[in-house]
Amino acid sequence: MSKVLFEVTEDNLETGMRGYPVGYCSTSFVDPVKGLFYRGKAASELKDQSPEQVMYLLLHGKEASDGELKDFASQLQNRGHCSQAVIRHIQALPRQGHPMKLFCEALLILGMLESQDDYKEDCLNLMAKLPHLVATVLNYHAGWGETPAPNSQLSYIENFAEMLKAPGVDKEKLTEALRLFNILHYDHGGGNLSVFTGKAVASGLEDMYGAITAAMCALAGPRHGKANQDCLEFVREILDQVGESATEADIEALVRQRLENNQLVFGFGHAVLREEDPRASILYAFGEEHFSDDPLIKTALLLRKAATKVLKENPKVSNPYPNVDAISGAVLSAAGFAFPEYFTVLFGLSRCIGIAIQIVYERCVARDGKGTAIVRPKYIYKPQ
Ligand code: MLT
Image (tube, rainbow, N blue to C red):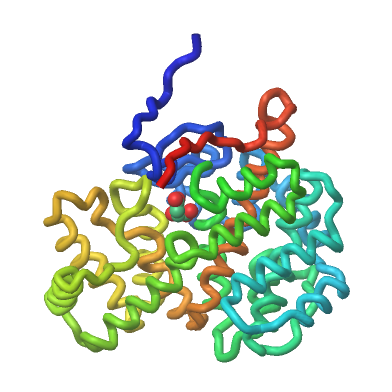
């Protein structure tokens, strides 16, 4: 007899399958109190590492030796170009609408033209090509000009920062902020909406690129990935209302007023976490260290205290603490990338990594290599 893991009652229906175990995830784990772990390592242990190091850890389940890291980095560099045909097709697409739509279309085009129809190969190719693909999408959508080809002398994130043609940015500051943002968003357990969607689509044996495109459509919604854009806009709104010399008390008053008016306080709470998201703690510390005079960082830091204090007073709020979105946009803005419309695409640049690796597990490793079954939950017929 196998163990009962979760008993479903009628109260569980229509609750987004919150907490239902449906499979295994070995890349990462989210502890309600301690937050995110990649392959057993806490986010705080990995925060100074390079994307190549963290991607290797997620992919192989162990830290790379110097030789392995060098080899992995050169594999990424060798595979890192999207073909001219892919670029041309992206640049023939409309530029209206949210850039996540263009990103999703670009992923499909990449799959149409470059898929190997092999989950493992496509996983590695996707990881390698994402910086070129995303830089092309952003430069084209924003009208920032032509995207240079990847430079094999540069690291993964230096290359991305170099290809991104956003105006007026300090490349060094932005590269460091992007490195941290990138590694903190790779993966967040097995059940967040985008990874679940990607694995569900791949369970029908759609290829990696189709499944990843579906995952990115899932990430695009404001309850998931677009929350980082909405949070930054919220922090900006607060700053506009209270001004640069505001105190914690000014912000507390504003938060109370918003709640009385049934307005949202963005960036607080989480489906799984019950303490401050360690990804947020790391980014707050980074913001304080590098951009302590930046008005958005100052506002986000005051909001961290004021909103938590107010939300804690409500016993119905299960998590009054900030999540990663409460601060990530302020850090990107302070580092010179003040373009909130593109924050969700940057989230996608990162999250595709964890999703692709989880898809490889489900398609090639799970159930002794047979792969997980096609996703097919039951809905109970209920005439209206
Ligand atoms: C994420 O990183 O995917 C978000 O925190 C949402 C989640 O984990 O459910």
